[in-house]
Image (cartoon, rainbow, N blue to C red):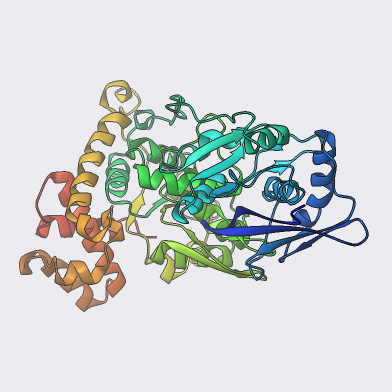
Length: 506
């Protein structure tokens, strides 16, 4: 009897996967199951789940010492995803299943006590890692089959029960293969921009922000429409491309928030954490290996911070790195993980604590008003591209609302054209939007004319804008030019970018 077996699975670190080799050894000694290779508590408990699952499908569990080694030994192993490959390693070691199908196959899945294969998190990045490592097949829980089927170039099979996997490995029965095409699931409904009455300046700023993936801050009295506008931003963003959709889907798969009816997320996510959110909930955290936070869940989408002046300073300052770099690095006990976090930040705040409907009714002193928005630090605000001060709608706005307001579909068409122009311009560098372009590229390789740069240079000389702010104005100017169908920005577009940055600044 062969006492040694080898099976493969995948460990997820951040959004990256690493193939794990699982060796099973049946040796002499008292009956026991020993797991080695840095297993966490959940994985340690898999010994009881595996024993019960094997017995309950009518097979004999070895009545001697069983050693299961997960390699590389220095990589922390987290979660119940290893239940199915551990059971297969034991069954192979006792020669209950042949080795033919195990070669070139990765196994993923949690086992119930009766042998059912339960869904697990992180299947999409795991299958992607298996494909890149050269594996030909992947067996996943049946509930995760549609998600795994998004990966091309590797055979994927779904298993509902451990008995089905044993039959498939023995060549006695098939597993479920993905359908030829994923069913078209209805996309989540997004509120229409036409619902917002008036606010033409704010809507224009929102369109520019959508076209270039720029950050926005909205200020104004309560009830004026700041939250309404922010919630309609995803409706004017174009659908995610294939690469971006897989990035977003992988993150939501790791967190366990992937909708069962939509295995591929194609709509830009909208994440709106509460003002009392902690640093860990925003950027990610947890013991062992850090989990993704709101900034990563909003990747390629919108992160909306309502009542941002009420948030803690540490929470707000934690956004500075992901805003600048498009990713977040988190160091915890078991290692350092990186999560993508290229999102659009939308901040909304009242002008003061009492927040009256009219400025004349404000009871706050000048010092209190300055201190209220002063909670937002200068370095953070310097990373915001567009500032919008929202005012009450003018006379007749309600009467003319039905005919005057533009729909999200019309605005989205213009945004799509502007983004396509930007993507074509930056295609050789791999950038998708103007907000991703480094300032040095805009200043050197895509330098504007002397006349166009004159307003920006005057602001720099007067100290009205920082060097970082100047780079951001250049990015906004390119977006304004893309919306206008121009080849490059002129003086008018640069002035418009400066006005966006200055007029609504608190």
